[in-house]
Length: 337
Image (cartoon, rainbow, N blue to C red; front, side, top):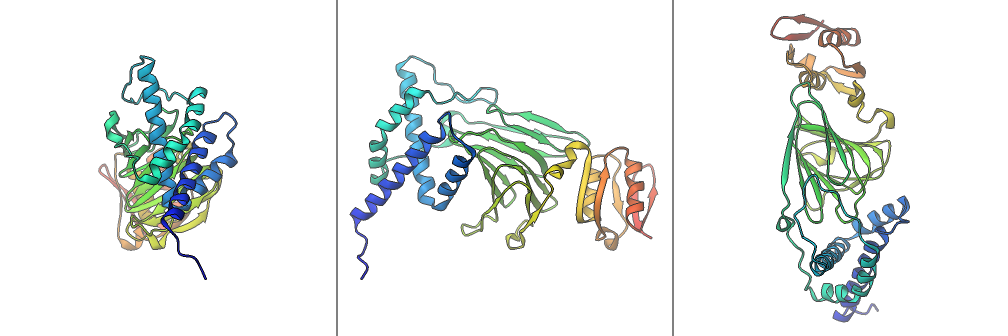
């Protein structure tokens, strides 16, 4: 017969989780941390909401220790900026954290640890926009880099315990610097992406979201409901779905060298509709490409289009698909033959 769980058992379990969170915080800020450590940490963090709460509590306590030390040393405490460098954890503070472990665990069990609001330390938002035919590379304060494709809009917000990016109508390639104290979180419509350090591409266009991974481990959760399924993508894997239809999310293999081919001037399509291809071209050139009818828009293409002159790209389409084009000063119209 199974013995019912008592309050004492629950407290012991909470204390064990809090202790594990402290262990991870110290371990991941060591100089010998490995890729295996990062993968194991990601598995532990996502295994239970209690693990994430405990880790946030440990981070909050650790940040308080840092502030106390800086006040004691007479150092200024400034709000983070998008041009500042992240200062690594000093070795002496690791000893502090170990000695403070019991206090964190006790406070967590008692429910006394208050997680700070990311906005209290002066977190700020910066919005970046690219126009038609324009690309841009953004260097963030933490060493991360973001390459924005044409006609894109995104907002970056650095908070105390998180780095956040919101993609509107956009496509961007991310090279994220590792920082265990601030995971990198991306929202793209109804999709959430979580990483700590990796290289990957996120596209949100025309009601569809796609994530393709070049290096590292990326966690993707299509759908905003609490019970939405999360996918862990490894190099050479991608996930795509239509917004509002998380159930149709499809995991697929992608060639690592083809991830974000647009960065090398190549548009790579795998059974994509002509409507998407026309949309991509309209983000590259001011003269619009229009499709004659629904049948033309639904035509599918698998292939590579080299990005150069607009007329040359349209001409290549007419060799890849049974279409004809009509060019005027105001537009290029594509119709089925």
